[in-house]
Image 1 (cartoon, rainbow, N blue to C red):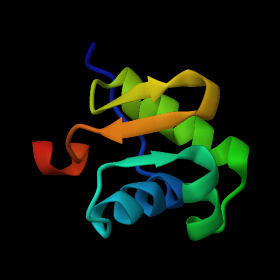
Image 2 (image 1 turned 180 degrees about the horizontal axis):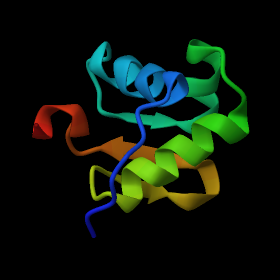
Image 3 (image 1 turned 135 degrees about the horizontal axis):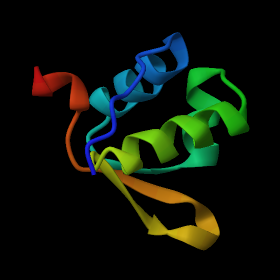
Length: 75
C-alpha cells in the first residue's frame, strides 16, 4: 500500500528518533519517553508509517514496531 505521509513535527520527531538509534525496533512507550509527544500521537504516527509500508508491527501486545526504512529517503 502506498500511503502519502504528512510530515508533521511529531512525524519528523519519530523518524528522527529512529534515525538516531542503532536498532530499528522500539515500542510506542519508549519513543514516547524520548520525543516528548503523547503516546497517542506516537501511536498514530507509527500506524501511518506502517500503513505506508515503511514499518511493521512486530509484537502487537507491546506495540513493538520495526522501521524498515525511512520514508524521507524515497524522494
